[in-house]
Length: 548
Length: 80
Image 1 (cartoon, rainbow over the protein chains, first blue to last red):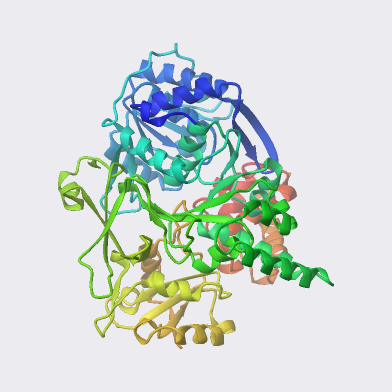
Image 2: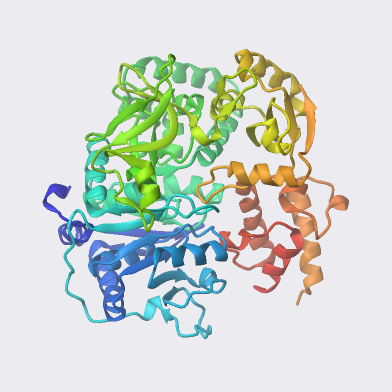
């Protein structure tokens, strides 16, 4: 691994990686079941330098990247860092209007973008377009593949200089552009690699686009610092995601809970399909593995005991990283008991991605783990139950919001970042996260209820999607009750729904459900957009409410 | 060569067969997710079936912003 303490900027850290691992495999790009390209570290640097030459000629200072999950994302970022520019990663799933607004807000003078996304955009800065079909009308934009400027000299940047402007809410409302410095990233990277280090040539499967903060850390900077290989899969289709693990002998992958759930369902179906003596034999081996790995994971042992499961993932899998939202403890336990570690954590863009991360020395899937090295977490204004606002201080906390000193001052006080999330710190140092403050519901009885907390209890019901709201949110101001929105209709499993609901304390019980048959709106990282869903339901007159 | 209407009809036939829903209940203007009762990952699975049937490549992003069968059929049609 390269020595991150020696570096002042991401460009210089990447440069050392390019030198040190020059002939190692850096990137594999795969689409469905086909492989498109393989590039060594030397070749990635060469590609980045060609683009950097163009950026230097354009005098680019802020380079926005709007691309789906692919290797040119890395090339574009490495090129921008080389010329000392700030990178603005944008979510490719936003609408053209949202892209336009954020590009303007960020003051992006250059845009590196996939052709199909660029076609829909109105952007008058310098556009560099990838994968444009031959003969496509580019109206002054440049083709990425034809960029071949002379190699520019590296532009030095310090730890306090901005590296990226990352938008923490691109879905309406006031744009919040978090300024993250080179120092923020270098410190965060060191702390992450302290817990989970890639071995040279370990393979990381990238299925989330690199604008996603987790993929940026563990699917770009992390592997490069260690000389690992990143496999980009340009589709999220479950059948190809499953195949990619054995095909490329993947060691790590970052996923969102929805994808993890899909993998779990696939495994459960296979277990159910076992016939004859194989079924009890497998159950016994699973039990044995659970007992033997109770205190700590024993990867070698689990791989031997539960060979078919591990072989299905290629036999090299070490861990999944999961983040982006709340992950159900039972799902984490399901994988852990099979000898598959799922590192869940808690993070937010304002804190440079990760704040806490679960490790396996003292695994607590009911929590989001302990703070990373160098990061302090405290609970402000805690009530008698120990629950209060999670606040974070440390070297990974952002410099502030772009062009918004007022919001910055309201968010960071005396170095403490006010996250707006509610949690409780356990004596062991594990953080229990209860929900987002903005989602918190105050019941008629004056109790605070966190929808995420209730949703955990409904996990595993045969509903495809569900989401808990206060009635007045869906019914335009009226009603104090708690409702769960279910898709599809809950009639088929009403008994189980009622049973689970009964297990909740009185004040957390939902009173009714709303049957909803449209796909829930989600962000690129597949988080449910609660506000947008509530708005759809309000627009439809509140949906059909069925009392439980 | 298929017409746009033929593409639409074939898309509806395939979707009905793949997700085991009554073909008679599907209309081009219907919402894909609502009518089939599927989530975004399942919708992506349908793309693979469509690719094989129509012999064209349909990247995941072709589903972005699509909610009804007609729009999806249009996106397939321009790639034929």
